[in-house]
Amino acid sequence: MKNHQVDAKKRISAKQNEKNKYGVNVYMPYLFTKELVNTFPNKVKQKFSDYNLIFGQDILSFSPDSLNLRSRPILKGKQNADAFFKEIVKTCDCKNGGGVNPDYAINALKLAMKKASFIGTIMQDAAGYTSKHDLLFITKKKVNNTGEISNDNIIINEIQGFILTQIGECNLLPRVPALQIVCSTNPDVSKYLMYTYIKAVKHLEHLKPHNILDWKTGILELAGSYNNASGLCLYNKFGFREDSTLDHPGCFKEGASGDTLAMRADLSDPGYKDLDDVVIGLKNKIIIGTSDKTSEPMCNKTINVGKADSKAQKLYIKLRAYNRSYLTNLFHENDDNTIKELLDATEIDHDVLKGDGYTDTNYALKELIEKGKMVALNQRRDIGDLINTKSSYDNDASTDNTKTKLKRSSSSNNAKTKRKRSSSSNNAKTKRKRSSSSNNAKTKRKRYSSSSSNGNSNKPKDNYYRNQKR
Image 1: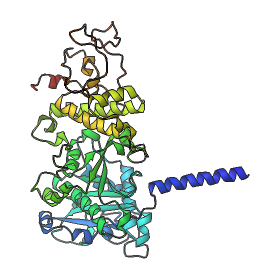
Image 2: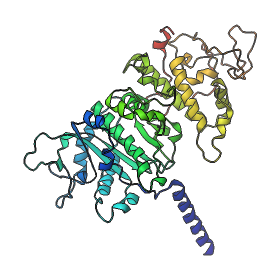
Image 3: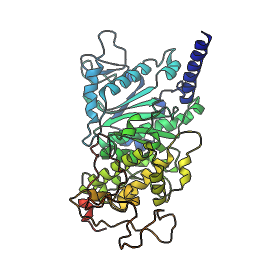
Image 4: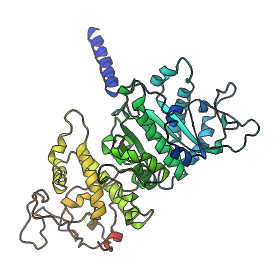
């Protein structure tokens, strides 16, 4: 009996340690408030003067029949969350793979409403511990009030977009309010929603107890991954960058399969001094760092891959998706030799494999994905080609077998692979044994294919890029 009691105590202790590790009971104040909106400069308020921000007690409940938002609890009838969601989710339409899980969104909506219902009650502070969600709608301003419709009741078709946030969605960053959902089919409203989220997180610095909240970081999960180019470019405009370290069971689990894309923003970056000018259109985007080298190429409209739905962009998306899947699988399979060859080929120090020394954060994967982004852009190939003599595209019989190999600098030891080459061949073929039954002389190296639902299970064909002048 005593042994069972000891085991039970150990299990309870382990669970408690896990809770402490992930900070389950972090206090989350109300993110969207009138105090926040009052900090917006006049030029921003003027730009969006045709819209209202609706939050807090203005969205306490749904009307079950007319599908209005109401600023008072409904005493009779059942709130029709399903019907309400079917209407507002129309603002989430995205032609390139973006989407919102209805059950997920409905549950988050209810939780945000519940938190709002405690405003002005003795439970207001306690709700910061029990309710982690916050909700904001953007609506058109009413011209005339008729019948029972007043400024306190929001007609469903007036809603132009909304955002849902949750603190603790990412257990790795339990003190960061994650942007769970952002929806709008109106580009200006989408920008205003992003602006409001960033301002709200940065405003946490001035709230008490501010010392337990992370006001320097923004995180989100992009539905549709690279295929959702419009969403990716919206977030890129406001300083968010892909971050594979958040594709983790303790954060955004769907990202590991390639269905979504984890993104992070360093809100303490000096570039955010231009946030007001970006949202009103005086500046194009937040410049991260001194050179903004991490900006997304697909969002640069001056180059082919930045032109929406172009052949160049479609192939680039396939290359990026393949790189991500290929690299992720290398680490899952613990293929140390191949990983180190890639690090050498991309001039990344092997010390990156050690991580930070106390977590399992995979910084090597993050750096290789970033390198793969530029390889796809500048060399029009996947990152695996850097360590394979034959192009990965040679597996496609419809293309020729003469793709130019990556030129390496003879003056850099780091740029050379450690594989010994045969001097008896003009083509500098490796000594790795190859199959004699294939005209393409395929290598025996295991190549990984994507298991994601994005349709990237095969290597992208380079018919378009192959015929372009470099």
